[in-house]
Length: 67
Picture 1: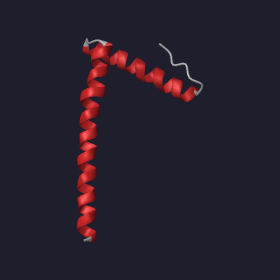
Picture 2: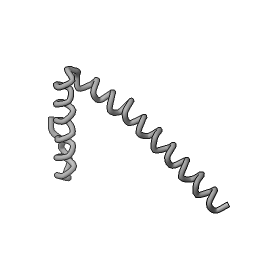
Picture 3: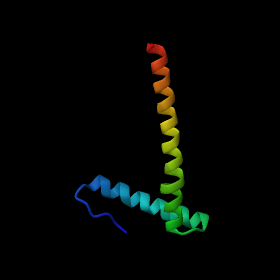
Picture 4: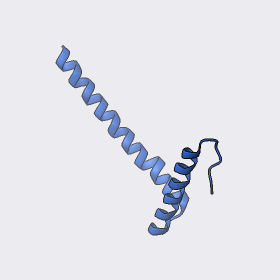
């Protein structure tokens, strides 16, 4: 599988990430699709939630300082 955009570094990054996911799938004895689900559904959701909580806490801190 290879990316086919005009920007070379984006193609290289995409190709590297796809190969990495395939490698992880082989190591964990899972399919490429299952690894994608874990990455984009569970891990990304967890990171987004963590980021939201951190931003909320920082905003509360700023509001406390300036009130």
